[in-house]
Every structure is written in structure tokens, then in C-alpha cells.
Image (cartoon, rainbow, N blue to C red; front, side, top):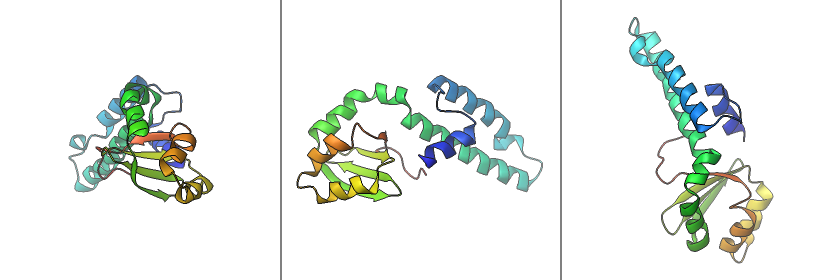
Length: 149
């Protein structure tokens, strides 16, 4: 959850921000920090490029975990967790990444290490995950995302 708070702080929004709010804040800040506005020196242009890269990453991340995004993709998500099996998974710093047999990938946030250990030791990981992970933790699709942090 620290990751989510970090991205909210970068954009200056709280957990009550709607997708519309995120978009407005993002556009306003990007107008201020767009690298094309910093042509006076290479140093200021580089600083603006770094800042805008962070802003873009934060915006995309927050949109991907937002409840409105989840509602829009609920049918696809439900089909994946109910019909596809787990092909692979990895755990790092309370983030569980699951790769499904249908090609979709999701990250689950705030997963305790004890739950991950139970998943690893489960005779039926798919069933365990359906019961204890998929609807219990904040998630986002990472299927089409490359190089996001």
C-alpha cells in the first residue's frame, strides 16, 4: 500500500479522488511540468522530463487500481479468476503477481507473507487463491503494462 500512497503523493490526491479528478489533476500538473516549457537550459529540461515521467507513471498506476477501472473490467477479471488456472506467480514486498493460463497478469497489493506461504503450500493453488486472494486484496491488471514501477 506504500506504493499507492507514493503515487497519490506525487499527484497530490487522496483516496477519494474519482477517475475524473485524477485526470483533471494530471492534466493540470502536466501542463505545468511539460518538458517543452523548459527550453532555457538542459538541466531544467532534464528535470522536467524526470518529473513528467513520474507524473505519467503515477497517473497510469492510480487509474489501474481505481475502483471505477475495476468496475469497467469486472467481467473480464471474473472470467480470468474463475476459468483460467495459475501458470506462474511471484511474491515481493507484499505484492503478489499472478500469471494466468489465458495470458492475463494481475498484481495483488498488501498480501501478507503468511498468505503467500499458504498459497505455495496449497494442494490446489487455484482454489486457494479464489477463496483467499482474488477478491480480498487490491489488484490491477499488468497484462499490457511494460516497465511500470
